[in-house]
Length: 183
Image 1: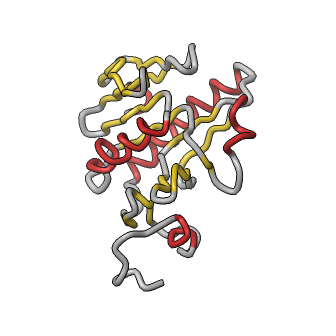
Image 2: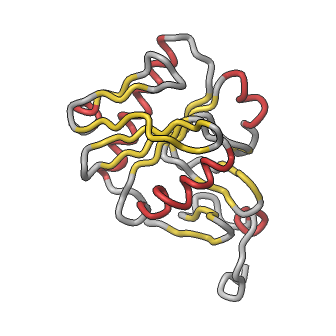
């Protein structure tokens, strides 16, 4: 692949990359990022465990996975959210070799190398394609922000900090205890 000469990349270009290559396709650009920090990964595992345990206890057959997992939104956007959830009702429709369509819940953990994309470009893509609940985790500020899609626009529903709890709207009863996530 002659990446230096191309100005726009597509899903076809993306699929030619080696499996595990540290890229996402964001607005037709191949965006590379280094592997996450150990703190980022610990936070990701704690969040995924909280969701997994909630789903198990509530006999919820939805699909939950953490990065890396390709999510194709269109020909110019293949993103890898840190954690995602798809309802049981929708998983047969969009879970294939990769995810093809908007998950119901996306969680992104900010880091210096990805904050711009998570807060701007990826957030806009999630909003445009209908991700119902978007959670931004800020390990520096020790906070979570929960955005809910209403009338095709994200609205900040809840912000939780340090020792507070953040409560999912999409999955009633799912609560993230920030004191445990950031311990």
